[in-house]
Length: 372
Image (cartoon, rainbow, N blue to C red; front, top):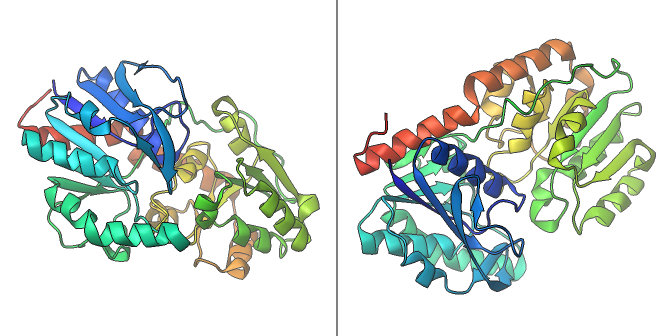
């Protein structure tokens, strides 16, 4: 049994890619008998101090810099912990810095999952650049292992060395037991129904919804179902109107977990045309769609992209190319067979149990323990 400390900006029930990933890993490690604790900011306020066997220390906060909560008493809270291994995350600063300091003070292994670079525009971009050049190298130096979810990402990032022996690739996973193909398939196209799901805010514009809306204008019979909410919703509504596709786009708002299966099942194909290789960490929604038996169209920078065409589960197109995106969506063939292969790929390579196996083995190799 290991004592594992997760240092992350936010935790379940907060909804987000990093937060969901940490939740699934932590709960499965706890079920295997490990003692798992999480230190994070109290967002949403008043969330419980324990989630499915994982103890959670939630710290008050008042401000954010970029997407990072500035939590009061973070160092004091961390000093109370006595873990065997510490696991923290980038692209959010401060939490990972103090996790590195605690690892050094306790002389315990530090594992950093590097989801993607910290980037931005304006003041946010300036602060990110200062951090990347000033603090990030020290954090990376302190790490025992640096985990990336996309094997190609170290060659895209200016801050990672692809030849660093500390680098390990462990992709994220999906709940294959929960995300399932629908009992009844939607009618065969046309019209082709395309799915897209993301937070609709400025931090997630790199997911490529603007490119997808432009591509939709080139597909006169296709329809688009957009799941997600955020301050950019009206921006995308205006964009759909500008492209003349507003009558063929359905903005669904936030899609609750209980309705995700139905959402994916209502589409013929799922698209994630991410545009920024430094901001796109993995693209968990692609795995969810594939687990539901949906072919996918994406770009080379998404974590699962390397398996899409070789395994015959969809197509990969260049970034920021709406004409090629439209052509790929138009040229998809034999959707039921592609969807079946997508489900098989998830079961083979991308379940959370397999991901947990890999992290557990990594942590045990660093601590010298063996829970088997």
